[in-house]
Amino acid sequence: MPQLDFSVFPSQFFWLAISFFVLLFVMAKFIVPRTAEMINLRKDKIDADLNDAAKLKQKVEKTLEKYNAALKKASEDANASLAKTKEELDLAVERKQAELSAELSRQISEGEKKIATTKNKAMADIDANVGILVPLVWQKLGFGALSAKEVNSAIKTLGEK
Image (cartoon, rainbow, N blue to C red; front, side, top):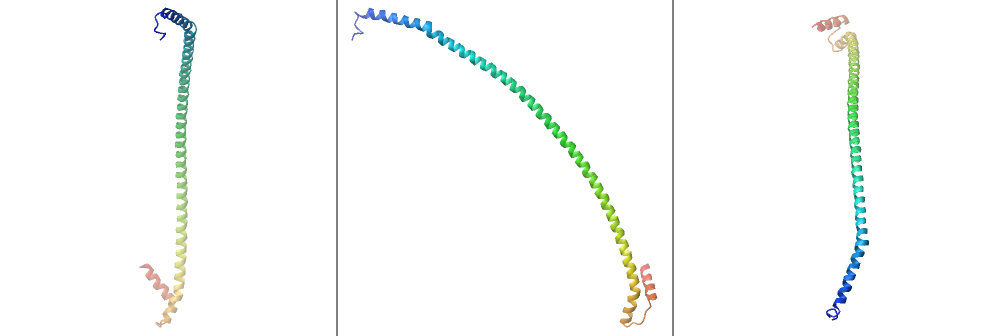
């Protein structure tokens, strides 16, 4: 094996050292600075993005607070409006019930008057017809003749009791 031949060992060591130092120089002068620059650029971009995100978060939180305050105010306004409308409707219902109650009382009173008038008229008609019908029925049953005057006096006597 040629690698283990000690006669070529110093020349291999020489070229190893030259290759190592050339690669070290290329890495130190070109590759590492570009990599460090990229890392710094990325770090700066990430920091800027984080700052923007923090600003946006604050802005969103302020907007959310305004939204919640507006929502709360709208809810309170709606509740107040509902309470006012309910109160107005309750008053309107009470007024309407009072009007209907008064109308019903009036109609009941008129109905009672009509009933009383009709009853009195019917009683007068009955009284008038009793004086005519009772003597006829009495006679048909064979009890003899009765006058309308006798029947009316008997009815008055029964009406007083």
